Image (cartoon, rainbow, N blue to C red; front, side, top):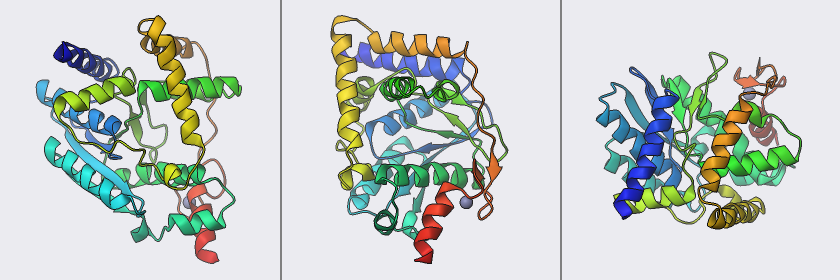
Length: 286
Ligand SMILES: [Zn+2]
């Protein structure tokens, strides 16, 4: 019975990869590993897909080490995952880049979740691109996308439309194409995948938000609970919902804000100076 479920999960991921051309011949894909179940599922499923279909491309694990007390433990898990998947791994230690998250947190008025997000998004685009990546794969899953949809929809923020898809094409030479192989599988499916495949992962939330007692995470968990509650009486609720929203989004148009190059680091930004430079330089100057 369990293996049937594993096959269903794998089939859904493979179908997503195939239909949306997430993996192509000659690609050099960096997968951002966090130590958790989702990115691990994305890594192993993509590796299996490439082998099964003899796709000639390179898959590399990429990890941002935030140099926090928990980071050593996370680093070990991530290294084990990469070793088990037989892929090469690249780690960036934020301290090596002069970033001290705790220092920035003390001096910035931004909430920690926003600081962490800026740093992650910046490094996840810049470093793999500089190392020759053609695409960046992330472990965002179906449940994350549903919560993302509800929150943005409720706030009348329609930016979600352009991002609600498994493949986000880079619209600028400096913007990496992002792929989300887990667009149609959620937390439950990723847990099953890792358990059945014997893949170790960090079960607690490893994100720095939790480390600094951020309040965002408990809210996200409540959202997940509600989704699963609906699914308890409406079979396949999450899957149907994500498919319907994705179809609906195709009818809508959204103008993305214009991309500029940061005056300090020349990475992409919507303002004169990018969020990363504002945070890191502000810290350096004090
Ligand atoms: Zn910058």
